[in-house]
Length: 116
Image (cartoon, rainbow, N blue to C red; front, side, top):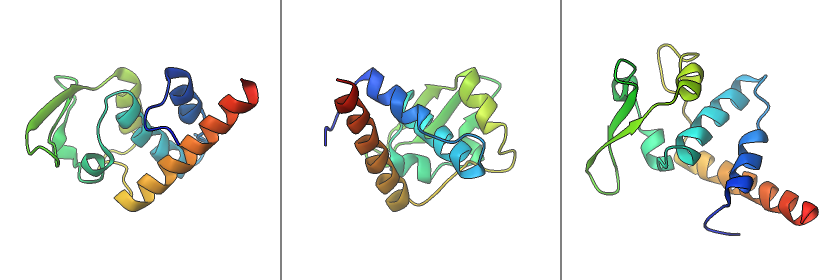
């Protein structure tokens, strides 16, 4: 399994979610935080609403690995998804998130091999 995915593989991973279901919407939002903004799963799992600053269209948090303050832009697409969670950040355990990411990665690589 590759440790880095191509843009096309990331698009396939993002497209794999059934966004008609609550879990699919949640997983899509979490995946966008990782694929578009580079936020680590552990940081996402620990995020709270306090980190979202919609007025400045940014997400501000203390990175778990480095303990440094990080500020990343919050795109309109991501904001529209996060707006669906008015009182919380969509979340799941880091273990579950990592397991699901690995499975989606396998799916993306499988699709690339089939189409390659």
